[in-house]
Length: 306
Image (cartoon, rainbow, N blue to C red):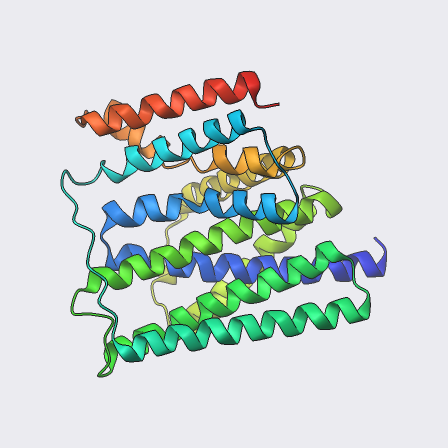
């Protein structure tokens, strides 16, 4: 491989790995705080972020009929998953303090200033526009997630609180995970168009594992010695499925990032179906409606989505 291409691959792999690490940490933080019935549909809506970026930056403008079908699929998924955990879920009232609002404004201002400076500098250097957008989006989402993960828990432990309801912080981190996953998969699609479907995944997974290992060492995470040999097979299978799914996403995104983003956001439907078939869980009327919307949307996309 040419040294310039290798350096580009390492830079993109480092950026993707950092976004992936921060996004997963935000997701697990959200799941720990709950409520799951809200976190699940919020994070599963990441496809809307990827779709919006594909329209804005890749100029993938589908027909009005295809747009309706895509929205039908995503809406059906959200409706199905959001009613799966609890029959009645009240969305927590967000009552941010003045200090928290100040924090959010400062973080957004810092992110915008850094992104603008980076964009101007790379344009002045004459870098390819696709790599400029890759760098700006990577920097922005990493800064947002890093500030949230590092500073919000500090504010919660101090005298300033997001609210007395811990669930609101769970929704906060869930939104962060949604933004992270949506941006990550768009960046992965952007890298695939220029480097192929395999190399960006290999580089990003290596850097992601490295960053998570550093984080685990820094947090003094225990339990490494408790992993048994028979559990390594399950861990390897999980990793294999993750890589196969991501490679499939990459191959499909070379044709249409918009379409693949919408269909890939249906992954929460699988555990939902397992619960219905394997654990004999009851299906409520909204879930039937959401499932029907998904089926109709996918049939329509398979017939008219090209």
